[in-house]
Amino acid sequence: MAAKHGTARLPRAVYEAELARLQIELVKLQEWVRHEGARLVVVFEGRDAAGKGSTIKRFTEHLNPRVVRIAALPRPTDRESTQWYFQRYVAQLPAAGEIVLFDRSWYNRAGVERVLGFCTPEQYQRFLRQCPILERLLVEDGLLLRKYWFSVSRDEQERRFRARIEDPLRRWKLSTVDLESVSRWDDYSRAKDDMFVHTDTPDCPWYVVDGDEKRRGRLNMIAHLLASVPYREIPPPPVKLPPRPHDSGYARTDRRLLHEVPDHAADLG
Image 1 (cartoon, rainbow, N blue to C red):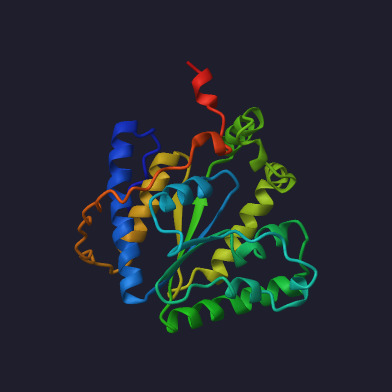
Image 2: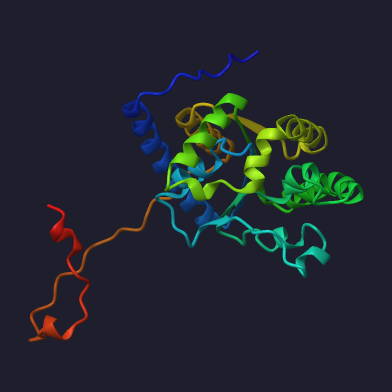
């Protein structure tokens, strides 16, 4: 049996050095996906405040948004509510040479929708039957699918919620659904267990990320993803900066004729 992940906070210097190394590897992964015409989907699911968003932020920090896209869908419109449940998610899947990160995904039906009664029991059961079939079809078609469940302890989730309430920069992250997850902890736990029973398959297994210590969780998730994809470094084409042309006599527009942004920074010192 593997040893339980440590939860002590990683020293910042150690964390930042390893994160930088992994982010370089993510750039290599991106270029491999683009070069090979691969299609990669990464599903981020888990408890509220478990570290999904901060991991996605570090994941995409140095990547090309034309290659790597985040799909964070809002609640369905009235029209979308009448479609096949998976339809709007399928529309977000990557074409050749693209990576899509799902910040929440079709698994909303197995979590929030089930627990809060936003879907019927029949719709929920249909989801459990269809989801493994859909994912198997995607993998058979050559799509690389990775699913990560971010776990967090009850005490740590409450601590993070309280910190968000007091932080004007993060208060927007708290929704009524997030707050209700505090009182529905056991319901969400049972829903997650049932979801795993039906959707943790050999074709598309779930990988659990211990998110109690965010630095460790980010590094562990990114390192695992990189190890799971058979990418290789694609040598970049040679780049040579062209020589500056000779002065052609161009004169810049008089700055007094421009609507310049006021120098706010000049008043700070």
